[in-house]
Image (cartoon, rainbow, N blue to C red; front, side):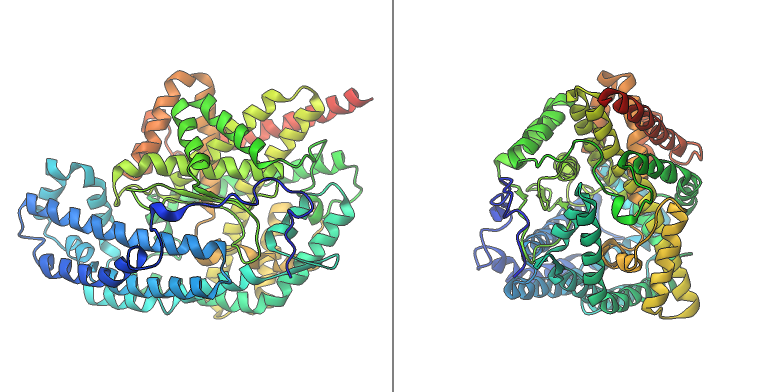
Length: 604
């Protein structure tokens, strides 16, 4: 039996569960079952009504078509969100698994009926498309139309697109589900107990070094048990990406992700180069940490060790109050929205066997609201994670006004509100500190997050890049090859600042982003460095900044990132832009160095 890590120290999060009735009252005919039974017929009816007519119907008729299309998309998302939320809290529940697969298969068939919209729009004569773009009645959907045009060079014929859609549910989607079920059912044996990934990971932050070392060994041993399965799944997902790249004519494996993110390959590479060029900051930071911990050697299991006095277990109530206060102090409306998540039961917080690890905010649909998913164990890191996910939630709540087609933002902007939420929460914590020792603990904790979000994520991108390119050149990669690529790209980041333990070579296998969303990880670094630049602007003139920022969130995906950031004077295509955030991190490291000396003097 897997041990509940909150058993010995309850946090108050044990019974914090979400209420999904705003999506469906249940899975019977009155709830999900009704849509499950009717959605394919609705999609077929839509296709029968509009297929082949997009080049001839009037503008008012086109608006009607889009509204009907949006209603179908919202139903798809309602069904998908509900079943994913159910399953993620208990992936070992066979009924949830069966329902998830049934919904996915049904939606795959139904959505294939709608593919004609994008394929036929992308092949409209230029004059007709210009007419749609300039129509006042379609102004609120203009960016959706612009996005269709951007994907035109990579859009295949309708028959091919429908075939690919039909096959996806039994190909890549199935491999993703297998990865999740294997990962969520894994146990890690520690001191006679069987722990979840979330529970064993928590131990890496313990003050006691022997506990951290033993937990690291247990994590490595547990990962080794399923490493071959994860290696095969990873190979298959990469092969699927390569097939997609070849069929659609994308120049590289990550080009499709960049297009989704509305950034150029060149601007992403500029970001990556800027971060890699400052890997020295990682080594400098770990040198500070090693000195503060008083260690002769600095190992991977020392990386997350808490520095200073921060060993308090946060209660759910205390974490809630702090995060709400942080958002309210920034903007009253942000605080009101954050409060709703707690009062209306839009959060799932307990740690349980079978529950997916990690955290996320699900935007669901425009007519409902987001839901936040966390595994709360009471660490300071969990408090920051809660602030992070509520940032997503506030963003998603405000962007609902853009409707089903434009409420979602590209990943490059999607991390903005979450990381900004972490910053304002950190500010609250720092303002409450009364000694240099407390301030040092907070700064070191924040630097842990910055290093992980910027440098670690780019190191993960370098690993992913090497995986895709090497598999393209050599074919399927063995577990040993994957492990070697992982260690090499990790050492590029760490240099000789960290000694890697035996077993660390398999730590790539628990990172689900590689499987769920290939190419995703650089968006974290993009978002963090963007927010650090925004935070500098905020500090100079909070009154001018705040309404612009809240409008940025409300705009959702109705504009491209470049236009969303124009009010702030930010140009993400400027190669020097990224140095603003990197210099911010360097100043934080300098502050840690200063506080470390002050703390030593304070305690003398």
